Image: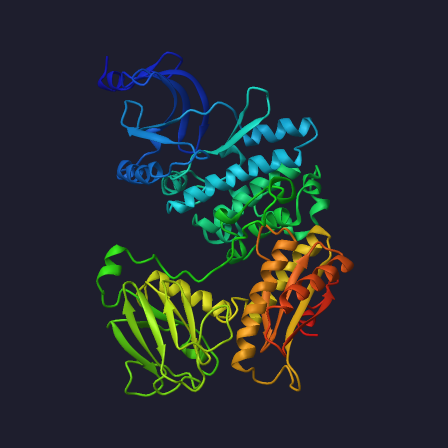
Length: 571
């Protein structure tokens, strides 16, 4: 017998024992990284899935790379993600020991449901919700799946035959898949499945969170069409109902459908994070208003207990979120490096701000057990806080709180200059108005294009509610007073909240600031009369929050296919 014959292990078959521990029961399938077997773990006396990475596909350095990715994969603990237990060497190559899940892949499940007339809306919701939670957990762990598709989702069954849960498989090894794929002639250079790749990945390669979201959208889309998409296929190119086999969307809300539409956007920035995707019927499953996820300005982690007992220079800062006369100052971070600081426009104060409506020495800031006391020093234009129109002599500022000096808004944060938190805050303020949180005009028009595209795709009406604050004997285009600014902020915030609540929204409505005291909100789905009734109800509730002499007025515009959306923004 030659040396080669002695070192080559026999073929794997039923009864083969690997590492004196794992007894092979059957093959479960082959994939890009190797073959998966059902095995019995003699140590734990539990069934496991063994993925054996083929020896012929390996190169120097692969074992360490695989080990590093395994460490990351094991950090994700979620009921909708297949657990990876261990990585071990064997005579057949490295073996991944994973949780064994009894069920069938979503790819097979879709084909079986096709023969039965397709999914019901509740069956779709159950599977979609589970997959989204699994993908969200993977992304929260800093991982990218890289090959999300129906074949990498397992669907279990309950004892009564109903759908159990959906579990995401084969994640955390995007880099390893890329290395293996690069060695196969004609294979994609980064190891994914082209049918489920986002346009930017097909063009340039590279697995990413945004690519996972596109693949997630296509995976859920396939549950409606029962067809594997061709590489580069774009479902948004023609109306939805011309492409689907079973009308699952008929039983879904507009927002549930919109979530999938957003995942399939060509622009990666338009795709919603997996953690914000939710599939349930808000009418049937809750009697309380749904908590709508919104894009917010994150103030950073709250200070710990030490910050309450002892001042730490630079641990907190003031972020400029709005400045009427100094827009270039928005996004600047002022470090709070002393427990007592003076704020104003003069050059001899500690914190110099360029906003013209701030007095020379406007206020003092004093640290008090983790919070800050802002004392107004008789300024010309006053100091203000949330939910009131009155000037304040003293403001107690907690972590994440905001206050206003004249027409300058500042937010107490806990991150450092040029930190990732600071960069995200500046990105937020480059898209959104720091006074109201609404999209800035150009970004709103872009979002409105997206809403119009969705309206045509789903073949549902799109209405634009246009609001403005009006006072006596003045034009709305005039420069707003501070009182009007405060009323505008409060009205815009409340209008968006009420619109979300009345529409039973699952994702935040699209709203944008369109003028000094004007803003607009999109509504897809309601007919013209329903939209009118909703807006009248909103105006009636918000009017009572405004100071005497100011009115909230509204008008409605309806989008027609092919219309330039800019014409909808202004009355």
